[in-house]
Image (cartoon, rainbow, N blue to C red; front, side, top):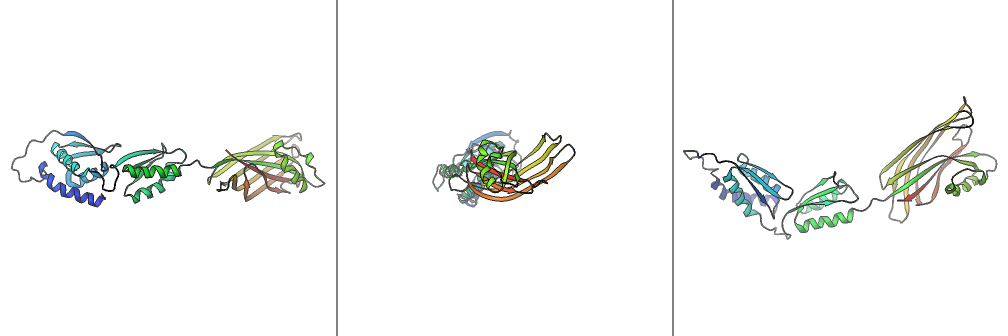
Length: 324
């Protein structure tokens, strides 16, 4: 029953039942004593209580009744007993099984496990609109609120179970390294964690040796969501001064359908200075913006830039992504 047809039905029925309430008996010479207001609750089995509430007001009861609805599809009436009796008669006439199948209009809350209800609302709302129904969201409790027949609600449940899947994510490690330039660097001259030994040899082959760790950054990246991280290195050395370096990374990770693959768009920079001694400092600047498609668990050298320091040394950025 669409809303227009529903309203027409109510209008026809109202013409028959309104005289019972005294609503149209304006020529009565003496006014009857005003009855005490009463309260009545009517739980609807087949029609939407909110639709009924709107139609009650449109039919001229707004000055004689207070009408509210509850989450279990119940109509709560308070006011003139005759008006309440008339609404009860109207409800009995329209609260009948739906002609399109199902068992009547119900209200249900569908809990989400992984996604926010806002993320799925657009798709669910489109499906409900095709049915002539509506959906709402409860983001605080990660729920979708739907009204419809049992069959319609089951259709929404099937859609939610298909779409509400874990969001792919990964831990991405960013390793900022420094290395000397010149001579014939040897891999054995470097001082990096054992896990990073795989990148030392290709760096040495490229003329970058004596590799050492400056700082690691770690981020948790969800599919399609922007990530960012920053760190400050303040390191007192043996020269009497202190290194002061700022590290920043930001970007987006995406997980294609191909197993164990990840695409990372990243922007990274290093700024600050190294201390040669207590009074003398050398400025440092490094910046890279790139995109890489790689396998989870693999170490990737994103950039190795000679001349990043005033001494001509290189700063190297290595990344590794692992699925959580």
